Image (cartoon, rainbow, N blue to C red; front, side):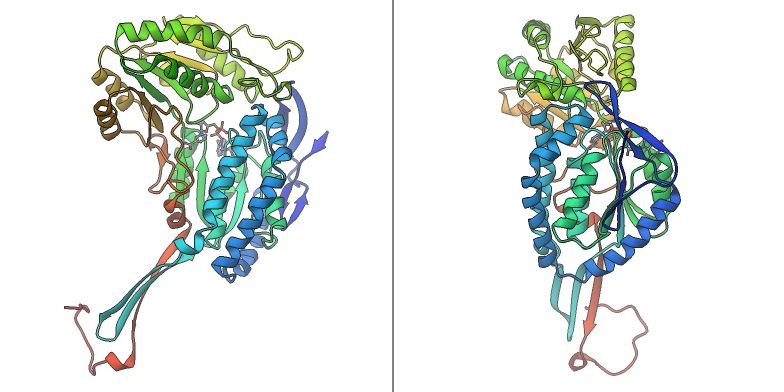
Length: 499
Ligand code: NAD
């Protein structure tokens, strides 16, 4: 059995805790490797190394640091196919989708090459007699991130690229389901010219996560994953005095107005609902057609498209629409939720429960499922399914559709499809969700804007990437300086003012 490692102090290091997790190939159902689960002592060892690496790195000027990221972009492009293949093999997503995972991370690295501009600080000349005030952004020190299985390249890069650009060291605790790509990414950072120990990977589960949260040296924690764990990490991390940002689960609604272009709507729904087997935090999981006639037209057009989606292993070529889900447990959970939808009275228009992939009978494949007549009290509406299952909730009016998205506990993304600018504008202004698509089903902002949801989809004040990332990974220091020519004699006992 292939045994994976940690990446500590620039080396692949075997685990010493004696605990391991199986890493599957979701297409075949076989265990292809095992990953070590770190003990608190192993995490502490990585932190000690990070402290030293960060001192070296913080002394490197921002432009030279940016050059290392520039080299890194070159290496990511060089190894793109290798990374995407390893990603598909452990995650199960198609090869083009795996490349997209790497590219959306790489775009944030490219954005972070502009760090010198973002870190310039502020200066007020002559704020008082002979007095200047300036603010600077300084790195936090050792920072850490805990990431989910569904984007094993993109989400780690969203965290460590800005952290490193700002002069921090970073410890990554990736998902134990697909840890190979994060290990490869860390190795490439060193090849790009970063000091040993600047970007380390400590594999593990809750034990490693708790060790990160309780470690006194680690200054900040970024988390992306499910909402219950996001809440837990936010609470424990904040209590321990860390800067914390946590991004959680989602239930993204797509409102379909009667005037929408139905061909465009159907294309959008099959891509955003079933791409990556629905295992995206920005997947559309609820379609909300407005009016009976819209709903009937939608179901009529959508049904044959969902029935003909091509499912297969990533090795089957580029015309596969989606692959297996990540584990046997995820498959069972999804099938259980689909059963509950039927029992609770929703209409299962396309039933993928019996799907078997020929030649891959032990793989974790789930056929595409489409529900109509879903109501908000049902479990399939309340819970994030995270599988290839789209629920249709019929609304009579635009206000009802809007209220549905507003009342949902999650607020990651949402979309509206319409030809009417007034309605689209009203929706974007009023809906209490973080990322909005207007005739765009997966509105993931590009690197130079920020990414983040509202309500139970995010905890903390700042978003991921974009200008927020430079705020999250730095502390502001403000200096008020007076030089002798402006100094008057005598002590001041009242609060200084410039008036
Ligand atoms: P998860 O919450 O199970 O795991 C995420 C990370 O937390 C992993 O590294 C895991 O090892 C760790 N973890 C798991 N259980 C833990 C525990 N009890 N204590 C401490 N740490 C623990 O999530 P997942 O299944 O890997 O990913 C899917 C979820 O992530 C979905 O809910 C999805 O919506 C969400 N997600 C959100 C975003 C976003 O930006 N909002 C992006 C991607 C994924």
